[in-house]
Length: 426
Image (cartoon, rainbow, N blue to C red; front, side, top):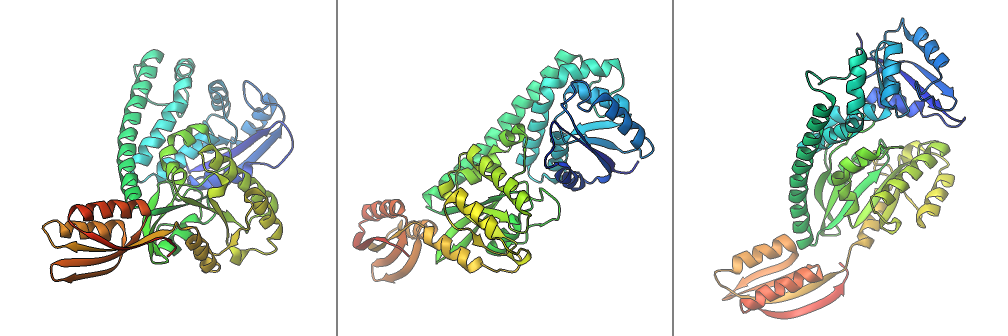
């Protein structure tokens, strides 16, 4: 059987359909879409669709023999069971489809743990009902029962959830240690965020001179990648993060919090928007980005809005007005593909860098002087160094707290501060 699918959406009222994005998701998961169906009506407790419409679709798709029927709606266990029995093939909802994509794209151990955790948290409330329904008849797509009863199966899920949370906590602690090192080094951090397929990774590759995979499907990037780069003779950190999507299931937001945490803890967030989108699509994605950023605790004042794909867009003034209304600043128009507008973005980033102090020190040579000099190169910017006689002369610049710490260490070795310029922007 080929990897084909039929898509269905039920909406209580007329409005913009979610089927186009569902089709993008299905294609990202590797499905060929055979047909799509939409019904406007109140949700049916037994089938989500109306029973008559469900039977009509079952008859229309019988000869197509799709591998899966995919609903844009969140399905209850009884609805999945009834629909699976009627369609005689596996039925999944949007949440399960997104999990399929994440499962295929996950590259790191952390991402794999997070995806499995989201799956199990989704499955737990339905475990007992799934077992009960599986006993009533074959339920395609539901595996792992074997000899276990509902309570035993639920206990297995709970134990696995506890295990995964412990493993993720271990990874989180390791990442926290790395972040503390960054803070100690006073490295300014910038995170790229935005709707999936807006061009974040393309921009990351351009700025960091990297070659991370860039795909034509949604969710090419699932794990955070961080690189150091030079900006105005300063070392900063740039992170590429997972893209947002409309109606992202809460369990995924929760499970991927450690990934989104790079956005939360960044000094500045570059919000990448697709300026080639139609006005309604742009509005929807902007709202999704705003709500997601607010949900994870990012203030609008920390955001630098960027309108990407300027080479593909025309008459973006109405879209720019929306961005200005949301953030109170004019967006920077760029093309991460051609480099258009990148100098203006780099200039803006340079303007938001914190002020550095400058310090000159004369330190007597001793057994610990090399470790002190090494610290200076690691956690500050060494602008001058000279070994003369029994002393080493150092000129450094950096974060005030880092320089004060360095000064205390140097004084402990008999070093003397020669000059200090406070608050000079470099």
